[in-house]
Structures are given as structure tokens and as C-alpha cells.
Length: 478
Image (cartoon, rainbow, N blue to C red):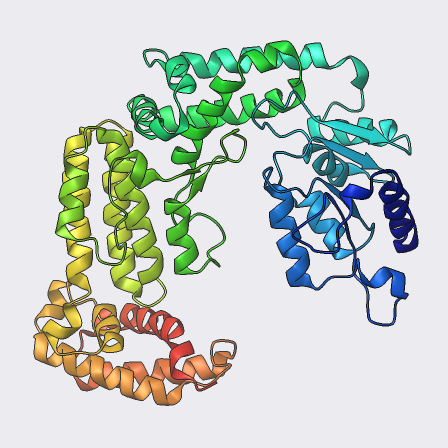
């Protein structure tokens, strides 16, 4: 659909429904989303908006309380890609498709209108092009079915699979009254979500089994709606997804490129996007806790966690917080973050293997949290800067053979390493072997100067080099 056709279609609908049109973005039921410029035709200018205005329209379209109900999206524009394959509006129920689509793009487009929302029975796609063959191929790619089967006869099969997956989740939830919880008003549901999560975490490998089972159920449910059998269990499925959201989101998950603020938000804003309430599920609220300052991990907050009745949920929460703290520290403190990570991993492994009870795990994690908090004060206690502390730890100060040098000598080594290495690094030194070789020689010379144990020098040199790579971005002027 060209921009001209978009405008003509808008005018035709406006002629039939004049009340749907309004020049103000905040009013009117119908809008066009397309890009353009000041050189475009005058009659198009009203429909050409800046990126900020298009984003504001997107927010309004997602809100069912807004009058904005119909959008004509220009094919091929970046807004179209945003609104079709990356746009999430659970209240959206009908899509008119006139653009050739295939593969995952087609699957994503159809999924736009097939989201669970309040009493919406299902989504409707009005196909103007005949996308059945493309949909068949997309489903074949998605399910690895080699293209076999008739997609027009698959709903009963999808319902059968959905009911099977539903029973698997119910089996994990056995002993917990999930049906009553699903019927509870959203405002009163948070404590029940916490109790359900506790129930899952109390089982052997419960978390992974539950995450997988609910994921499988959600996929089957999406294919089964609007079948009556699917609608009968929609509330329970929504509750299962809420519990899954609490268990699935871990601080520090992902590719490591997120900011600390985004990582913190990952635990504070756990959203189940497939539930009708569209509420934010906050794991701290679910556990009955105030949101902590993650960088501090105060004694007051740790006491609150220790007193939680949901012991397994408390373990999960502490693990998320500590993982986030480790992510932050690993960007600057190589040895310290590795040491804490090993301690955390060892404690969690014992817990997962059921070698120790949840109460003991909580105690160990709280002790680790306190050690991490104290680690932030080491520089002040040692009389060293943050960079010097990082190099001080890189010297292997806990090694008995190194300890004989004494703390004053080790601090002198750390100070001299920072001073000399800082002066030697260049913008591309991590990419040039010759530059790294020069710094290795420099480090070895300093270690020998202070009588560092010869058999420990190679390891210390390598660790110092790795530590320097973490800090060099702060040392080199932009």
C-alpha cells in the first residue's frame, strides 16, 4: 500500500464515518502512520508526523481507554516494522493484511492480534492477498513439520496439545490452589503469586520444569484460542504466566550490554505480557518487601528477606540481587568479582542439589551480601584508590607465598603498577601484541623489584594485564 493509497483509504473511511476523523492527535478514532517530508503533497502533511509524535500515537493505541482505535500503517516504512513485527498491543483484535509476508515476519504479524486481553475471544486477520501458503510454510518452519498437515484442520490438534501441556503445569502446581488464585482480583493476587513461586521452587528442579512447561503451554494456548476449551482455562493460564514471569526474570540475564539501570529494572519490573490485567508484577511487592537500593543491600533489607515466609523465593530474590551486583563489579574488579561469583555459585549449587536447606542458603547468601558490601570499603580501609585495590587483589594477596611480602609492600606494588601501567596504555593496546608485551615486561620488572615470588610472577602478570583491560577505558582520554 503506497502513501497515496493510505491517504485515499483514510478519506474514504472518513466520508463514511466523519466522527472518526480529528486533526488533533489526542482525538479521533482513526490515524495514518507513515513518514514523509515537507516537500510532500499538502493533503498528506496532516498525516506526516515526527518520530516523537508517532511514538506517542503508539502509546495511545495500546491504551484501550483512548478513542484511537483504527490505524492505517504504510507498508515498507520503519513505523510499519515497529507496529507490525515489534508492536505489542494486547487489546488489538483485527488486522487487515494487504502486504506479502512470509516466515517469522508473518508469524509475528498474526501474533499481534492473537494476544490474550480481558474478554477478547481471539484475533481476526482479514487476508486480502491469500497468505495461506505462506502461513503453511511459516508454520512448517516454526514446527519443523516438513510442511505436512492441513493448517485449516489444526485447531483441534492444538487444543489437544494445549490440554496436555495444561495438565503438566497443573501437576507441578499440585497442592497449591491455583484455580482460586487465578480468580482473585489483580490487586490481591501478588501474595498468591509469591506463594505459587515458593511452591514451584520447593520441588526438585521445579523452576526449570515449570518455566519450560508454561512456555510450552503458552505456545499451544496461542494456537488454540478462541476455542472454547482454551477460553475455559484462560484465567489459569494467565496466572501460570504471572508466576513464570517472577521466576524467569533474573538480573544480569542477556548479552551483558544492558545498563545497570536496565538490569535493576529487570527485577523491579517483571511483566507478564500475556495476561489480561496488563499489570506490572514486581517481585519485591510479591514478596511483601520494599524495593531496595540494590547497590547498598542494607542490613534492614537483608533482615526483611531473612524473615520472608517464602524461603525458596527469598533465595531466588537474593540470587538475583547478588548477580546484579556481580555484573557491576565485574566491569572493574576482576579478582574480587570472580571470587564472589564462585562463592555464589557454590552456595546455589548446594541448594539446587538439596544438600542444604533454604534457611541455610539464605544465611549464606546474606553473609555473602555483607562481604560484598564490605568489599566496597576496602579501598578506604587500605588507603588505596579503587584502581589500586583492583591491582592489589590481582597480586594474589591471599596466597601464603605472597603474604610474606606484607601488606605495606603489596600496597606499594599496587600503587606503582597503577601509575606505570596507566602511563603505558594506548587506545589500541589491547589489539596490539607488541604493546601488551611491553606492559608484561613492565609488570614483571616491578614485581621483581619488590621481591615478588618468582614462581607466582607469571600468573600475577597475566591477571594484572586482564585487570588493566577492564580499567583502561577510564584511563585513556576520549
